[in-house]
Length: 381
Image 1 (cartoon, rainbow, N blue to C red):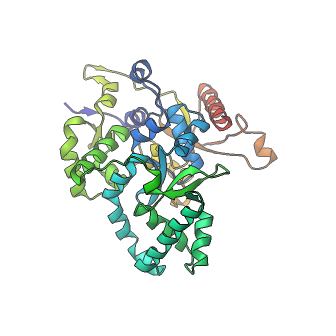
Image 2 (cartoon, one colour):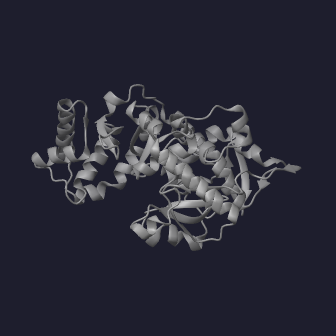
Image 3 (cartoon, rainbow, N blue to C red):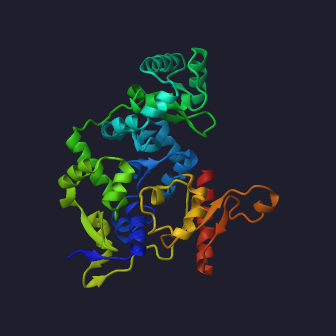
C-alpha cells in the first residue's frame, strides 16, 4: 500500500535524507559522516557560492571548516560543472562518470552562446594548451585570474563572459577542475583533472544512469521524477531507463496525487500503516546557506518554501538564492552578515543577522540563537 503524506512530511523527510538532521537510527548505529561522506551521499552538492558550500558540508557532517577545507586540499573533493552548467562539489572519483552522462547536453545547450562569443574549436585548443602550459610552470595549480591573464596575453579575450566559458568548456571536457584552496582560502586553484583525480571511477552508460538515479532518490527523496529531471537535465527516456534498473531498491509515497520516490530507510521513519510515527525536525531551526541542496535539489520547492515567501528568498526570481532560516522544514526567513554598526548590534553570535517573515515561538528563537552559535563556531575552527 502506498502511503499518502502531507507536504510538511515530505519536507521533514528530506531533512533526514539529506543528512541535515540526524535520525534516531543514524545517531544510534552509524558513525558520524565526514565531509567526503556527506558529499558522496548527495552525489553532487550545489557549489556556486564556495563559502556557502563549505557550510552545507559542515552543517551535515558536524565538521570544522578546517576539516572541510582539508578534503579539498587532499584531492578527495573537487568542484566543477557536472550538472546544469552550474558549479557543484563532488567526490573526486564521481566527477567523470557523472559528466559522461551530462556533458554532451550541457555543451549543446551552450552552443548558441559560444557562437555569439566567437569561441571556435581552434580557440578552445589554444586555451587548453595555454592552461596546461601554465600549470606546468606554476607547480600544477593556477588561479582564475592567472589563467585569464595567460589567455589575454595570447590574444584570447576574456571579457563579456568569454573567459568564464573557456573555463567552463575546459572543465566540461575534464581538462581542468577546481581543487585545493587558494592562498586566501576564499576560492580554489584550477588544477589538471588527470593529475589531480587519482582514482576516477568508470561506468558504462547503463550503470551510470542507474547509479545517478538511485543516488539522487536515496539522498534527496522523497522526490518526483520531475524533480530528478530538473536536477540532472537527463532526458525522460534516460530517467526511465535508470529508474527501471533501481525501482526495486526504492519506496514510493503519494502526496497530492504525485508519486515521490525515496530510500527505504527514509520511508521507515514513517513507521508502519498501523503505527505512524512523528517525523523528527518539527521543532528544528536551521541556518542553511544560499543555494543549499535542500531547496535547489528540486524543481517543486513548495513543500519547504511557501509561494508567498519565494520572492523574499529569490528576489526577482533571478536565480540568486538567499541563505535561509528553516523552521520545522519550512523556510521561515533569511539571514546574512550585518552591514554597518547598527546592524552588527542585532547580529546573533556576531555573525548572523536574521530577517524573519513568519512568527517564531520563544523556543524557536532560542533554537535560532543556538544555530547561529553553531555557525560561528564553524567559521572559527
